[in-house]
Image (cartoon, rainbow, N blue to C red; front, side, top):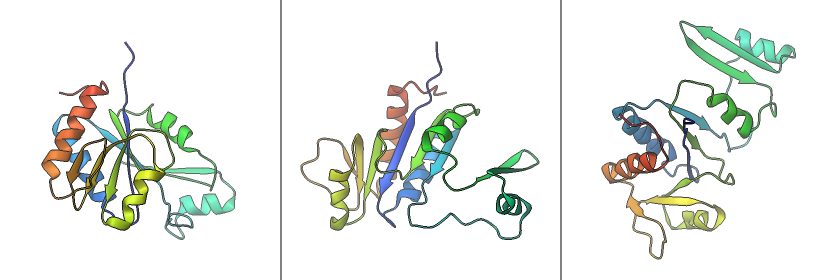
Length: 173
């Protein structure tokens, strides 16, 4: 039987609370014995921050397309802009000893999503995204066809997540 590695996106506009939600989901998975891999989309324009003057950045600036630094088993991977697609990154993650992949951002991708809504201006996200499975919001959102849990109710949305993991075939301890 093939091992299932669920992928779940957490989407929302800037400062909506996506990272806080992802943090809680990682902790909930860890309590169930699951190892989480995360991918974050830097959607604010420009390149993600890379430490200046470090050897791996020097390698990239000199023409390397990808550079990895390893020390005591910890790894930092950097690549030239545009080298790796999300699909390629997911393929790479699927080779790692992890159980679930959480993606923060990449609103237009087709994976199951949690939408984080901080204010009424953020409601347009619900029309811009597909495959929303849960809405986490600061105030109740009316007329949804999916569950809506308030941002402050961390225990309910982490319970939803562990149930979702079971449904997706993740190996829970």
